[in-house]
Length: 133
Image 1 (cartoon, helix red, strand yellow):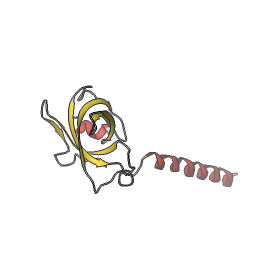
Image 2 (cartoon, rainbow, N blue to C red):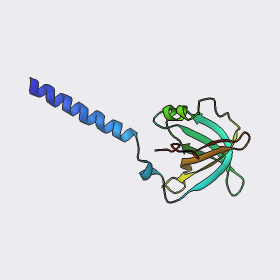
Image 3 (cartoon, rainbow, N blue to C red):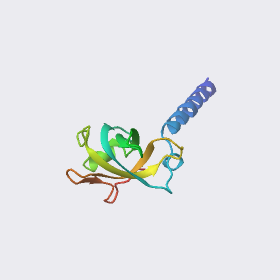
């Protein structure tokens, strides 16, 4: 009986351990750390959550057509200690974001390295500890 219980618990840990490991992806595997791009656009949405927050911005492409980009940021818990809250950004805020693009060609997604809002000088990613990991 103890052996069956041990096997059952072991199988459960294996399954659930695999699921949680899959849920948190590798930054290095997802984004190209050798490249950095800068996007200038308008804030659409801030998804303030853990383990990573996301910002969505509309950015005009080379033909002036708006393209929505998803930008991965740090987790809400960490951002909160750095002065970023759910209310820090509003739709329509103009922002300049630099970061590493997706390794998947054509995917409009990046990891944030720095963010600047020119209207009030708000900036993130320029002080020690303000990194996405």
